[in-house]
Image (cartoon, rainbow, N blue to C red; front, top):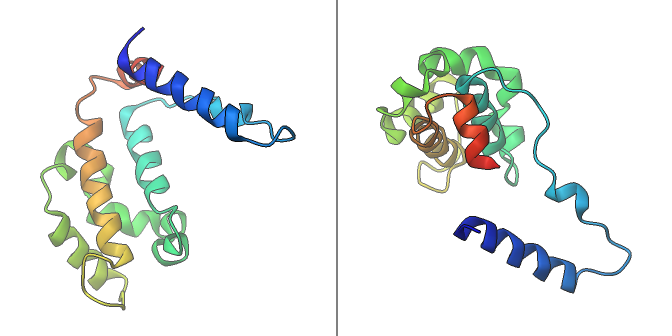
Length: 137
């Protein structure tokens, strides 16, 4: 058994031991059943999920602004995005969407920009979607 499996099993065992008896956690241990046809699809899901933190969905509005965001991030070409500076992307997104708020690393757009670039770097390590799915399994 590899290290990731040992950590997973230990975490699952711990959660099962502290949860109330009436709570069933099984649904949280199932993987995503969607069929992704490409790494680009997986990448888009990564950055969509990256906005799911506190008030970020109401600020980023990824699904609503997907076309405009695509224009700023090389049409979601993660191989190109991984070379972008998160700070430059952040400034471009602020301009495009008239983003207010403090101009610092706590800004939602700043956090999300870093995730967009970091996710591109991560997904670039896989040869194709099958390689990624095997890694997740």
